[in-house]
Length: 122
Length: 107
Image (cartoon, rainbow over all chains, first blue to last red; front, side):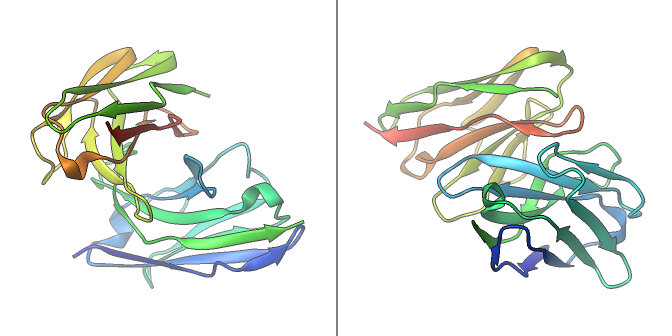
């Protein structure tokens, strides 16, 4: 069974930093690209960042580019999101998400974690 | 960036109704579109991918169609468990983008 377990969410002051983790199990983690998707309270879904299966290619939403860094530890099956210069508008539930196929270019997600909450106080 | 515009933003329907949700892209692409269902307090659930492919385990009353800029999610014979918020998402190019969501409410 595929499992994704996020952790690291917290209350942090604006300008601060936080690192989220997503522990993966039940599938060949090294074969899949992975993404982070967030959802502000009462709002819709926003894709944040993606990393290639080998951990060597990266993509970011404009809203986080230059502030967030995604990484992937294929030895320990963990996805990370390092968040710097946090803003009030980064307040959201952060999900890690896995595509429904390891085929390169598959960019829709059939497996999601339960989310970890990041709250940024201004 | 490809902007995805969903309509309507909400719809009231009864059990047994047919519901259609539309997603329009700001620029055309092939069939790299997905639909999700989200219930309060839960993670999104993938319903349809590649515009019209039904995700494993999803009831056949859900179907998707479209290509280019206009895509549609149809729920035939709405069931009580289908009352939720639905999102489209383009997977054609980065940054990936979601539509604003359509809330399907009980009439």
